[in-house]
Length: 180
Image: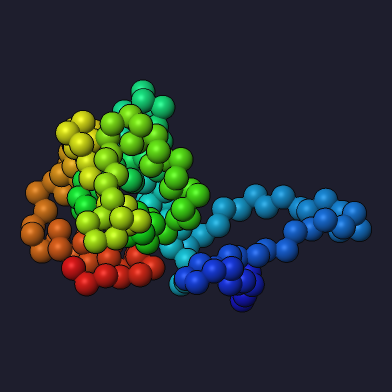
């Protein structure tokens, strides 16, 4: 059974269009009292576990960022610039899969606040390389520490093989896999 029609809106992005009932002739739709159940194709328990895990995983950094008037976009920029000092703005755009316009405001706030430093490239002065500052590194660590504690709690006494299995699973969930 086809649940929706996929419409391609950009490379590697798809949008699911589900028709809405807008006609007055359709009347009021009947409410459904039975919950959706797992099928051979859809595993709602796993989907819900992802919702709750993500909500809780980002909750600690969200609280830290909120104090500075920052949000999740700032977190992602601070994280990747700290993991890859000297990355270009183009590399960051590719990593985050966002537009220049989306990045511009966030990056400007982080630069103006002294967390990120933007330096012209040595060969091409138009190229912009991004580096964390000392306070940017401290912020990245403050955001990562509660997440790391949460990950360690979840792994409990898991074996190294179990950890590798989780990493393989998460890599498999990505749209575009990179060789690590």
